[in-house]
Length: 180
Image (cartoon, rainbow, N blue to C red; front, side, top):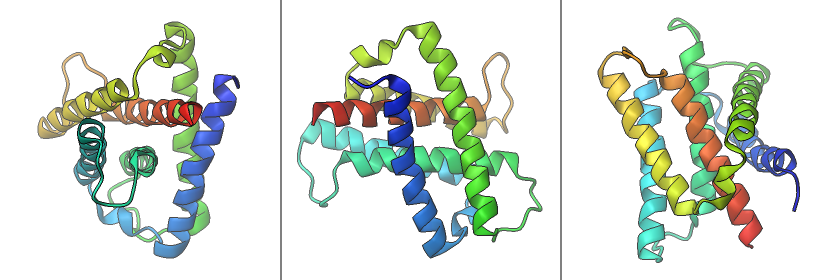
């Protein structure tokens, strides 16, 4: 079995590669989305994964792997949106966009390394369905924080939740690749 960092980096590279290709095709059209809209996009993807896990039948010829990749990418896009000032141009150069994506990915990876150390890779013993449920729970938390105008009493902010969501999705991609 490969070390977690190698597996994680390989899964993240698949996500980043798709992000780069879509940025080349579409530019930064996603920048028009508010973070709450990105949260909803992630929610749609996680909900579809849960439905596919429960029903075990897909009427659209796409499995759960592309949905987990989408969750990672939308989470990192949300982190980018959280960092950019409101007056930042919607259309950004491809190089700048890719650098911001890489920065968000690196911060998310750093958090994974810290938590993975402290939790002893407990995620390896989890079911992919449990990771899906954790993503959905985190999304409900983010929605509540957004509905409270970003104010929390003791909880971490939306950025930490987006990182956790991306990491859970990357863990799911690793587990799914191992199962093949």
